[in-house]
Every structure is written in C-alpha cells, then in structure tokens.
Image: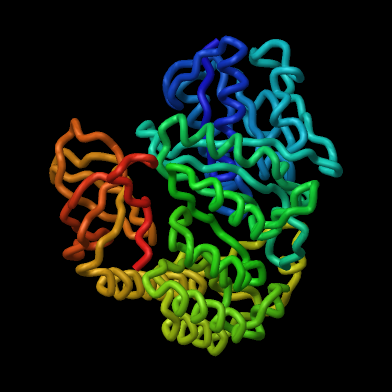
Length: 447
C-alpha cells in the first residue's frame, strides 16, 4: 500500500507523524510524498487557531484531488476536539483521536473508501506517553526529540489540554538511549520538545533540571537545544546549567503572550510582567549572547489600545531577539470565547503587523550585536543560486556561508560578518572535530 502524510501545527505533531510513518513502514507500506498518487492519506491536524482548522479542510480537499479513490484518515488535536465536524467533510473515511492515533493499523483492517466515515475518538483520560522523533529535512542534521506531552494548565484561550490530555513525560532512564541513538545516527543537534516542556516530570520524579544536568554529563557529540519553556518554569538553575554547558545551545524560547498585566490576568497566565522582564535580564546577564524568542497573542478579548501599547513598549524595552506573533482567534470550549469586549478582526491584524515589524527590528538589533563574533553553524541546506550553505548558530541565528555541494554537513565554526535581510553572512574557519580527537573543540562557544 502506498500512503502519504501531511502534518499541520507544532513540532510535536511532526514528531508524532514520523512515529506513525515508521509504524506503517514496518508493516510493509510504501511512503510517498503528499500529492503523489497513493492508496491512503493520513492528515495530522492542529487546532491552536481558527486558520489551522480551515487549513485542515483545505488539505483534505487537496488529498482527494490528487488521489480521489484514496482512503483518507484524519488525526491530531482538531480530530480529538471536533471529530463529527471532520467526519462531515466529503472524502474523509476515518477520524482518530489522541488515544487512537498510534493504533491506526489495529483499528483499520482495510484502507479502502467506505460509504460512511468511522470515528475512533474516546476520552483522553489516562493517556500514556508515546516516544517520537523527527527530522526537518533529509540532511539529518537536526532532530526533534519528544520529551513531554499534554498540559495541566488552564489558560483561558487554549484548547490543548482538551485535545492532548494531562501532562506526561518520557521515562528518565530512556533519555540516554534516545540521545545516543540520534548521536550515532549522525545528527548534530537534538531539540528537546514538549507541549509544556517545563512541566517534564518523569514517573520516577525527575524534573527538567535533572534532564539538563544528566544530558550535560553524558557529553554527547551533538549539541542540544530547548524548545519553548513557560516563563514560570525557567529557573535560575536551568539558566546556570545552560550558561556553563558545552552541550546546550544558548537559546531560550519563552512565551510571553502579552506585556499587559491586565491581559495576562484575563489569559490566566502563571507569571507577571515584572517577573518576565527580570527573567530575560537574568538570562542576558548570565549569557550575554543568548538568543531569546517570545510568543505573543494580539487582539485577546478585552485588550484595548492601552493594553496593546503596554505590550509593544514592554517588548521594545527588552533584549528579546525575535517574536512569534499570533492573532487571537476564538476557540470553542475555552473561557475566553465568552469574554466581552471582543477586538475587531481588523484591529487584531493591525496589532499583529506592528508586532511583526517590531520583531524584524529586534532581530536586526540582535544580529548587529553578533557581528564579528565566532559561532558554530550546522549546515542544513545548500542554496545553489548563492553558492552558500545555511543553518542555525547555537544562539539561533540563521546564517549562511560559502561552500561547495560536496561539503560534509558537519558543524562549522564561522565568523559572522554582515546582515542580509533575515540571515547573517559568515566566513567559515574550520570544521568541529569529533569527541576524542586531539583537535576536539566543543560544538558550542562559551564566550
């Protein structure tokens, strides 16, 4: 059977799609690119925003256009929350919830078109943690390792706890096995991911700080990066471990959502504006060249012009490196959907544009501070037009440097010399040696 996959949403979804792909491959299926003729299509969905739901329906229609007789299955967060809605879309044959998505081949005996779609969605109590990894591209340079799933928070705008269930984590003794497996597979960077990574809590009691300390003690021949961690979970211990580590990237992604104290309260966030500002300052004091990203939501119900200007001024005042800006969209079964004083869509989009423009300025400032510095880039893709390789530095700068197509995709130490739009141009110095080599230099720089 030929099957194709399409994934929407977060890195966690991509890791889980990769896990499901491996299950099908082990059972003899042939994986083909989405859009090629096939016998079956599986779509892994997101539901963080309204656009994610709309995009999912578009992908279903695209799948039917390319392979009109293919079996079409849908899973993911949107499937867990709105299974009947998805099942009503023409062409869908099956819908799988959070508990069922890793057992599709046990639930479906024949991947054939049927008259009426089947819904395999149960409640999400007592979900088990399922391990998963994925690579963004065929270069096998960076791999995402799922460490945690689910969320116990009750943010007023978010459906993730309803879609993914309670927080649960990878067994602590399994960590070394996965790190070594990815290291031996030739990856140069591992990104630790989770729906709420800061809430990592192993069945044996270890927390995120224990994970970092343990991985650092392994001294793997890969560098390790944290994905998004909630502000209330970025402790001074975590900052200190990363600051002193030759393994962990000097990069933090810390959701802010709003710089207004009033809006944060309405969002039911677990920190205050002053705490967030202090956290960013403490990171920069310990690691001056650290890259710091933030998520922000514009147009939350009740966010007036003054609230937004507070957010803009707050972010402008902080040494943040970049922003991920999201326009608020109403989600069913969340408290915020019933809040009064909704912000007109037009105003939401104006605010989003302003913050994205601010993000460009913050990134330029951060890049400017790195001119003349030495960083380590892991080359990922080659641009034949420019003759350059590109990849990320340890502090999350997208950099390019000249090279040839036959160059081994191993960590390269570069001097960052100039800015070209959204990237920095670097001059390569030399490749990083393997651990154990007399010329070994750690993948990260400490200065």
